[in-house]
Image (cartoon, rainbow, N blue to C red; front, side, top):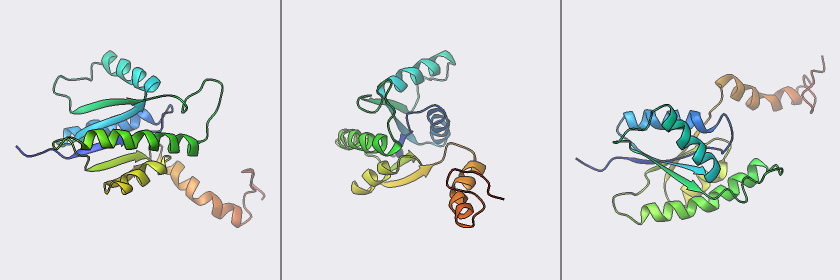
Length: 165
């Protein structure tokens, strides 16, 4: 049997982002893809606990869970911007990719990143790895986000999101 395609999946470490990407990862596994799933240490512990609770983890599981340090991404009482989180995770991701790609059988073929983490796809590009953005929320919400600037420009909504008509 040949080498399985290997996808690195990177969610934003926030509620509502991790599990949709985990479900997507299981779909990839069901289609013969090996997945490495990256999380911060604190979210990693919660994910492992949840997966064990619902008995989703299988002995032949092709999802490898990898944790990166929480600091300085998650600091209690201090809110970080998505840009800061993306940049910090990108720095850790470079180390993860280097370690994985050091093995001839493990090379990453594609990176799937939460659409909020644009810096992750830039890291993939620097390594010559294909990348794709994953939007974990509803398509309707994405459409609203993409069209909101047009509503402001047309004068229908002000900069605070209040309808002007």
